[in-house]
Image (cartoon, rainbow over all chains, first blue to last red; front, side, top):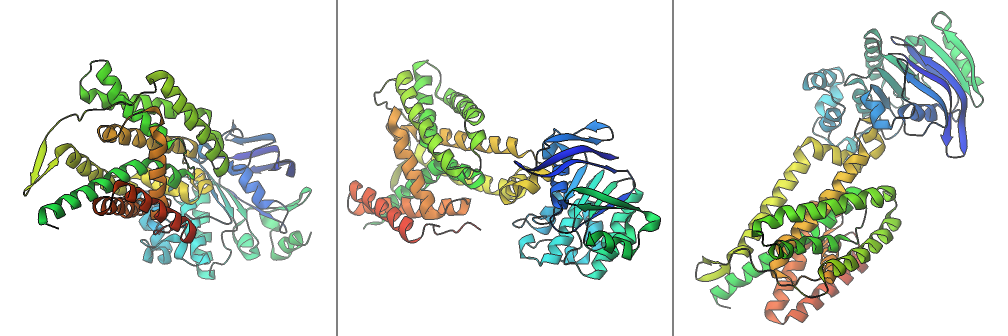
Length: 226
Length: 285
């Protein structure tokens, strides 16, 4: 499903982070946003998820306005977010974390095979795992269930290269299945490997866009410099 | 101490512990899940305790007190959640003040509706069960059994059921819980009403052993609060430990010295805990 942000405005109370920001997340595409820290990538993810209230504009999922719905209602319509921090339930076991996203036992078994680290730690409390392992669990949670729009905020931060490779394969598979994916990343090689379109964000809004053919390491780094 | 006296003491202590655990359960549940110290907890106990008084007045059979209690307490809790509590989640001090005001309102309301006089609620059934050579009131044994079974069932439900999992997820990380499609507002409302219903059921079950009057909630609140302080706020295990310590101490001092010494001992213990170990015996997490 395609997600359309139409001139959205929002932030933290009176402190607006985004004004009249528009963005399309087409179904079956990986859209990446790059920008320095403080340009509002995480705020954007929270606005899409419904954690922060929209103060203007509209969010349409397959044409249907969802900008006024509470977070849980958006999640039930298929908008899945992996937050940058607090992406797992620390006091619950790994299995309980995976179970809560609506993953079937088969799906959970499959993801545990993809990421053997999780498979080994099914009964362990998520909070007792390392930062990288928690990232993998948060990522696995986002991949389970039937998300139509996946918003991934820094999924590869602190994760070992072999597991980043596995993440990329998972994301690409979900793209092939028709999900709209928004990737908020600092990891340039991940963006170069899988993104279909890259938007550069600074504090005033989007500055330029790179299409698939133009996405090269230098171009993405240039976007990060701005 | 003869063996009969020992058995009787053990039964009395068990009864005290069970009654206390039952009394404190609703308060502990609401605080553990919602971080709201429900100062009107004792007044929901009071409301539940009036259910058998009302059914007797209306000439209904004693068992009718159960649906009357659930309806009366449940409706009150639903209205209170909608009007007051819903707006005060995550505002601990505000919710404390608001529920304190609610407590006064409920106490005065009960005095208007039911009158200020003390009521005696007869046991729903008389009868003594012989344990060895000691006879003990069957009703008390029934309540002890219900409390033990109820605690076990609640603990298993919280650990094993999907709703229990959603509750634990909400307590852990409310934002992520919403992101997982959990309607935390509705789950919180349900938890508050459930906590009040447990308070009401405690009132109903303990009514024959208490004097029922509009101001009885204060004593129930204080005893529940002491139990949570000693056990540690927020876990079912802590609540059971707190009830065991407070109930056991009170039963012991009452048996050896006097009822007053029992109350005094509990008060001193609660003060010591608040002073030296405010997290209780069972730390939260």
